[in-house]
Length: 516
Image 1: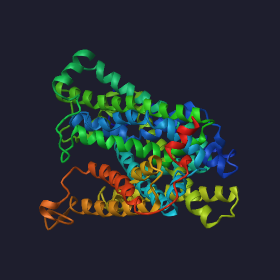
Image 2: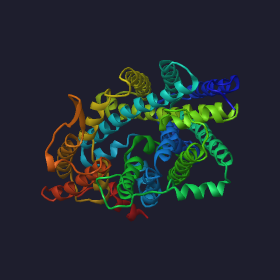
Image 3: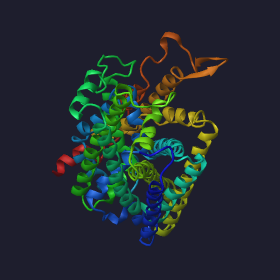
Image 4: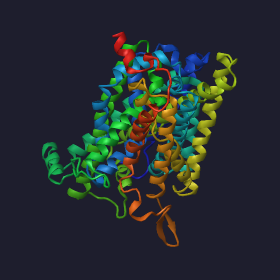
């Protein structure tokens, strides 16, 4: 077994993994002659590779680390969100994939403009930019924190190295390099998880079947509580949240929709979308099971765990002390790879939105090469910004630096799924009604955030706005559900008070039915 420092074999595996990432960026660099290839791969990437890329984008290193710790501490309730994804998407992928491939050039938010005007496009694209900018810095910080502890390296060195590798891959290789690197990283992540689970299963005092039974008896495998209570984290809160998570990710998120555009045909794009979903759910379950097995390994079987070890540190401790030489390096490389596969997608897609939604509008006469150059500049800027935010997290010890960003996102970018549902299912809905729905949504979200967010004040915590019995009473996860419903329902009702020509049916679900 390994000690607390990495063996030379493990170090070489990690170095080779980093070198491979840089090589792939350089390999695809010469093929990036225009913005169409840089952002859409020329529409020639096979569906299985796109599906693997969707999977790798969804399964970030936060999943690799956070799911085991969540299952270790409690049960599998956080998995409910992921389980809802295939149930929802089986009904919508067959419609939205051909819709987007027909209606948009590259940016998801072009659909919103065609359906509801320029303001809807700006609102939705800014929502994407804010949430993914916040996510990038957070993911980079969290994975760097884990890797620096596991590899005994300064955290700033880890942040800088990961940031450099991701920027080189994305800046030079475009979406082709991103997708093909995601394929490799996806296999690494699956292999790393299976290695860990296998060792946990067969190192238990009991056999695998009895071990699972013990976990069931201890209620470590379950999705409760099942109370119909929206104020607590319950099965129904996570299920409702999962429905809108699925719709938001697959119907309004540029990192996924852009993958549809890279496919050769509608059929291949649909296959890729289904593949991404069907791979993600078993892997989410895999890492939940790892967390449960870790609990039994240390808490039930009595294996050594240093006093004071936090829940978040249990899995990294296991990786560093219980895995064989070579496997440790593969797993650590898989954690880094999971971060790369998530962040490279964010950077390429942020650049695509910046070019299509803003640069091309400001400079409509720009050539494809001009847009390619602008895209690369935006990739560099977004990568450096993520590194800066991650470093600020270190300085601020993980607190405060992005609090304002998250609150602004919650207030000004809520209800994106509501816009999509309103546009897809109603020809009556118009931009005036939508704007009223967005205004009501923003006001509601501001009220909910202000009356449910505590801040430290003179040694105690107080709410930003305390309205007593009228404070927002439900769990914070329900805020997203309500915001989407408000935009959808209020926008539809308000649309009846404004006269406007009926929308082109090809922008709605009815156009799909008329063509099939």
